[in-house]
Image 1 (cartoon, one colour):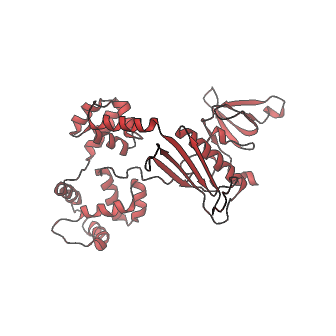
Image 2 (tube, helix red, strand yellow):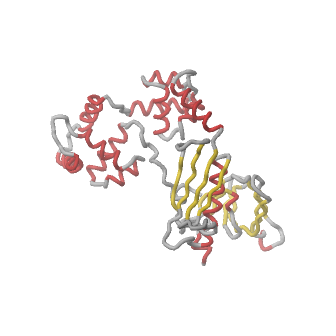
Image 3 (cartoon, one colour):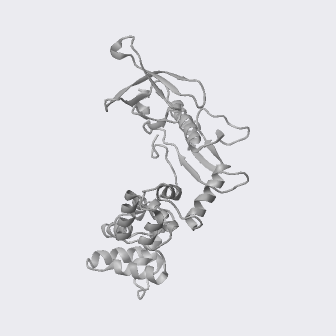
Length: 334
């Protein structure tokens, strides 16, 4: 099940990271073209408020423009003065405020370093910054999902900030568990006096929580709306004993979304799935039966008989394996 199908509401991918030259150039092009800032924010992977705050860097220090007028002023000048060197203004504003700014050459250097597996200390020296900052840049570029992944690939100098951050996170994760909460899904129970149906479960791994979420949401789509006019919300949170903060993901459910990629445990008889075969192609067929003996056990599916014969196609999936479901919910209902 893809992230879009799950209606995932994560912090934007570049939330809190240092702005880059390429982002400013996208913003300038969108401002000149009259694109709504909310759409630009989505393109950049940032919040709309962060994009609006970045507009102040387009205003030269000698010009006094109120916050309310800033967007209109910048758009107007970009259109009226095509030769305006707005980038020089942005660089100067960052220099004056001593805030970070990545240039295109830095992005190229980081991408090359990632591809060549340049050791983190050497890459940090080349970029003239700390290892932790480099790891954050790699994350913001979408090369690494986390600073932990960046450190695993390129290393980290013991005793420095990156190594300490990764070590602390792993120490916390060792005793943490993943909590899944789903509100409003059909097929779940309603606690006494609760306003909506709710399911809460505890899992040792994030993959386990995601597999259970996919199973519950897939069942919800088959049963229909659980509560009239009530959105279905899900939350997956990593928490240690007594911790009130930690890694959290949440989202809403689109009841008419296509199947997409889902975990094998969420498959149901009637699904049409696509399975890769050894010759490099794939077969696509309907599930006629499923055998799953319990959590952690393989999921065995029977597909439609071959050419209407008694010969069955049987495919075995690991419980957390992702399967491509190509049949839409509205098709199943027809």
